[in-house]
Length: 334
Image (cartoon, one colour):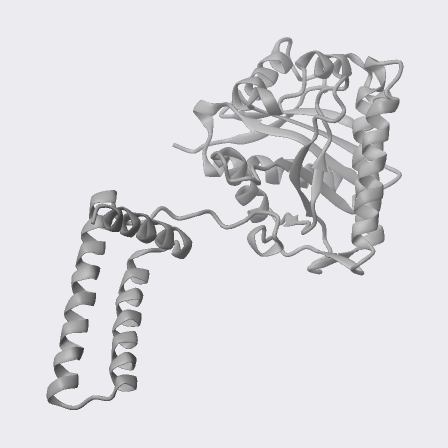
């Protein structure tokens, strides 16, 4: 069966009553509460006429004629930057094809509709490795396939709660442009940062609070911090890699052995050491090995044994921990 993907401009006359609400529900059902903007704020901007929204637009993804996704972006004309706020698909309709097609449709629309230099997307990423973040890791891969590159410098996502401006999060900024360079000047990066913080976030929250000075102050300090840090280099790398940039440490790979297998391995290791020591002692007596030669043979045996362990242990640090712990327990029982 042929699958048909199409964008629906939710501000266009062809958009039917209720389609905006159905598209917004796709956003609610597919986005974690901690990462979700208050839908009342979105509804407010939806009611503002297009020419007075400051470049905010709303779109739906239709799959075979049915609403299946929601997208929202802001185009800042003075900076020629488009910021993709949200792009999500109904959980039951999610697939590699639907996500990749959706992002390509939105990016192509933006590039055809405006004089755009950069298309930006943020990711709220789990940098502490304390919990899984598969949804955002998946979204990162999709964006990279669509030509987005990771800005290899720390990025602060502003708080989604205007009254708690310090509730910000460490994230990742991805940038798509026609420039194929793997780096960006500090001046350009800081200009994009200012566009996101002031022309997007501050502009979004202004209608909801008379005084947003504290929120503004937090973002201004972050700009100053980023500017100070970037003075050490002349550019920001854009090579699409998180692990090599230091933004995300490599995930620990669980060892292949169970706890019981580790104890068996350690017991075998102790026997191997005893047997090696006995064998070397016998050789020393009957062959006349010198002390230095005997020690050298013993050390080589230990390195071979350690190498065999390393083959089966993808995480070297974890392997060391798992080996030391049983040894201490075994000796404590002697």
